[in-house]
Length: 211
Figure 1 (cartoon, rainbow, N blue to C red):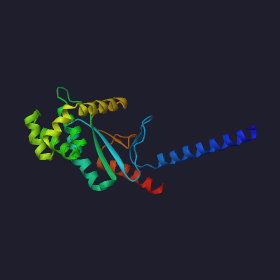
Figure 2: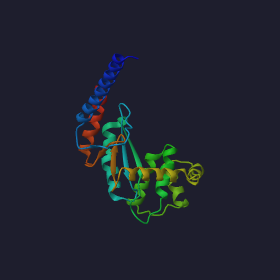
Figure 3: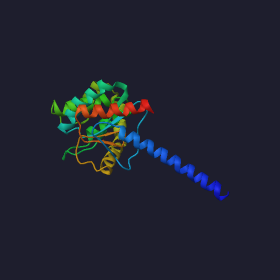
Figure 4: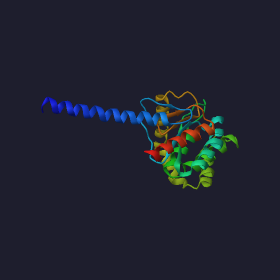
């Protein structure tokens, strides 16, 4: 390959890189609301949908209120365009990880949202603190899950492993409190009021329509 061809290909490559970088900069600046891009974290974005990752502790009262008020309103506002996923991140000392494992197992069985609601209600509205097999059987009836399959899933250790991965993720992004919200894997949100989250989420969805 001669020097002229090499120079031409190098110039083309640089032009393409500049165009891609320029596009991402435009996309970045186009977002509205209060947010911060998280350096080094990959995007999990799917076109036409925003993934809301909530790092939360079931025993955290602020998490319960955020889930009951803000997340519920956001789900009504955006419907199928918003997917809310809870990542268990224990911060309250002296609590067993059982509820987090229960939630993770329910997610694998397609009942994560219902289990999440009932666990928050059980802890904060009914003051239930122990989730032994007897209590779990009552909750499973309410959620609509087969007890034998559920308990086998818990015994497998996989829900506990999922909890561990969530904790590692939270520590990697230097999480200091719950609830902490990340959109699409790499957009950090510190202002967790409904209006700000609505503005940022709508901005991401609007970008999808333009791209």
